[in-house]
Amino acid sequence: MALRKLVAGNWKMNGDRAALSELDSIDAAAEAHPGVDVAICPPFTLIVPATGRAPGLAIGAQDCHTAISGAHTGCISAEMLRDAGARYVIVGHSERRTDQHESDAEVRAKAEAAIAAGLVAILCVGETEAERDAGRALDVVRGQLQGSIPPAGTGETLVVAYEPVWAIGTGRTPSVADVAEMHAAIRATLGGLLDGEGAAVRILYGGSVKPSNAAELMAVPDVDGALVGGASLKAADFEPIIAAAAA
Ligand SMILES: O=C(CO)COP(=O)(O)O
Image 1 (tube, rainbow, N blue to C red):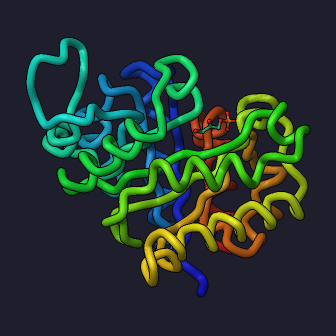
Image 2 (image 1 turned 90 degrees about the vertical axis):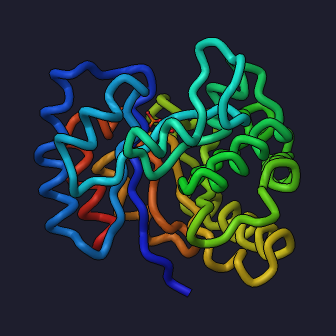
């Protein structure tokens, strides 16, 4: 089943108000390709101005807390993100799994909080280079999915992003055959965890997606879009990726 593709940009800890000018032509590119969903996940500080500046784009966040509110200094809840105008939130990014020691159980709780707040959770999984070299990539990702997929997730509320850690920000990508093998394994695992809904959950590829490789990645079976880091910061790089997803 061909699912509607989603191209999401993760700005990570980059961007100030001046950078929002990039959204003008990204918004126009999204409008020019109505068959593709386009989202930008800027830092928290830019969510409100981003929604005001680019009403045609879906805006997302890069993390949320597991609780709705309370004594959690410095944290942001999914409800707050929804109130700010966000529609998506990334959970379980490998940078947070490493830097903030987030576990699969915590990632699942964040995804559940996001869905309860009416957001779409983009849940990230992916193996390290050592795990791939040891032949464990499929097992590692299956384990992450089993530990973190919310059982109530549907095609409307949940997106999975496969991001091999060693491909993030390195310019390296897995072979098309390796991406195909992993996405097929993720699809099968989702089927086991979510029954019929597993076929409706979009599976994005992320890790050094750029204009020069987007077309071949988007053509891989069960690649339902991309989660893009560095190449989402500049409209000139992001627009061709949107176009590749639309082709
Ligand atoms: O981590 C990523 C997106 O979440 C990928 O980052 P790059 O596209 O910069 O490799």
